[in-house]
Image 1 (cartoon, rainbow, N blue to C red):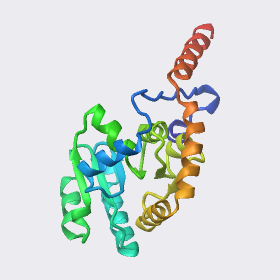
Image 2 (spheres, helix red, strand yellow; image 1 turned 30 degrees about the vertical axis):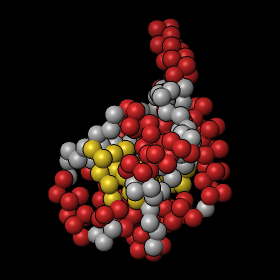
Image 3 (cartoon, helix red, strand yellow; image 1 turned 90 degrees about the vertical axis):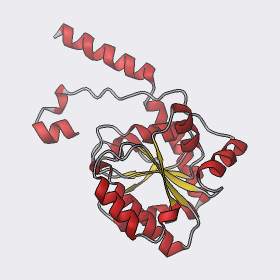
Image 4 (cartoon, rainbow, N blue to C red; image 1 turned 180 degrees about the horizontal axis):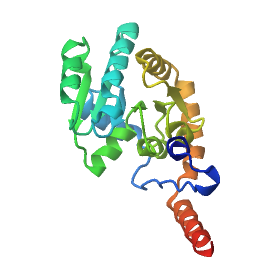
Length: 223
């Protein structure tokens, strides 16, 4: 865990209380997916990222990985990026200016809760490859929406994703690209990851969060 690595604290003194998942996230029907794709991706399948455009979110390498995926496969897929560009604006713009697939990268800006539910739910996969995360909420939101996941193999994300995602080195554009290629080409794999996600998400309910927090507080008072 990051606290152990950064501060040298005894793991026995740490309780991990995870977030729960908002109930608004749920699988979409095929008609709903078609409607969302008509609006956001010219009716093409797409990879989806959601989050602030902070440097640690690794947007530049995500775009570069998508560009390499497009070059190697000739796919018509899109990459939809949800959230405001608040930091590192120049590097994202510079990257967009030099890639051939710029017309296939869609920036939505901030999405409302309803829009987020729909755009996530209609995605072929979540592509979430930050260099650092304290938790990684979009991963479990994707599980809740029956959307397969590509995510980083660093910090909290392997623990949150379990065996229900394709894990990649966030510093490797090639690995990001290869994960996209594998996800796009293999429906059996996507369905398998969705089923694993259904099991993994059960670890992240608000009932379990509340019970764990109550136990932690009770134990602290007794000590």
